Image 1 (cartoon, each protein chain N blue to C red):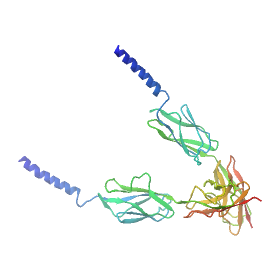
Image 2: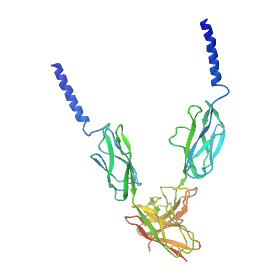
Image 3: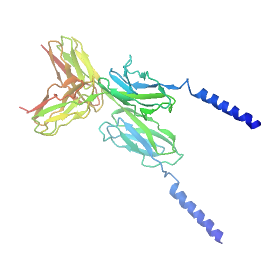
Image 4: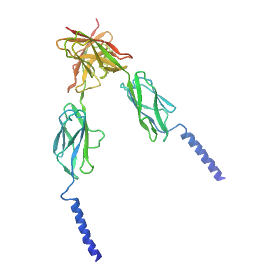
Length: 195
Length: 205
């Protein structure tokens, strides 16, 4: 009789344990870092789990993310990108696949911004020496040029083209030199030189 | 009789062993290592009373090896210190390496890694006439933006600029009712903070 109760008790404890620990409830974090995310739209999955990554608050598009559901020891995980912000070309997952043994903090999602051309026209440039800059991007414009192109600018990034060096014996000014890159190339910058 | 023979034999073996390990052929250790991303001359490293100059590599981006001419004996302590920084750069012990000071012979090889980064300096200037908020200045697409508050009299970008990098400050957004102009907006970074990119705002006419 005693033995019978013990057996029932053990079975009950077993059942309780299974409910608490089993199923999809795990005990390990699954996540890591992302880069190139300046707006909402990045959606990640691991199996049937889905996670919408909020836009970075850091201002530089970087941050960290963790799936809301935990994974269990020995679970296989495979993080995939199923949605991207509309200002990126692609999002690559690094270290996205493996078998969980401890908290996983090393998944990296790296999104690459769409880039667009930034260019303009030049009027009356007769001498050499004109150098334009957009921050650290530096472009020399030769004498007689009627146009110029700066390095491509990521979508949604700002730009500001200014003159680092004037051509010999001429003074040039830039119009429409600053703004924010949209979905299309910008080609309305004008550099006008005198005399 | 047997033990009588064994004892001298042991003593002989011991003596031979001592002669083999010590004495004339002492182990010598060279203190050396590698410097990553050294671009300019001036780096000086010092240990055990000797200072060496580490020259940048012929090809920018390559790593540079260094070795002190004074060899150390087993058990000598060394402590390599940076006693001179190169021009325009800051070098430090590589972040993944535990120590620049140890005892010769403890590690199989004394190879200390250093890494160097270009110095950066801030850019900014004075502001006058900014009677309302709303001004946004940009340093191109790479240097970030800054939004000085109403009545600010100076500003600086939070992102600094590396040595030899260009900068160009433009007005991204004019404050309501004002037109702000930037003087000395462009340049190439040297070794000091830039504080003369002045902004003057005046009411629109």
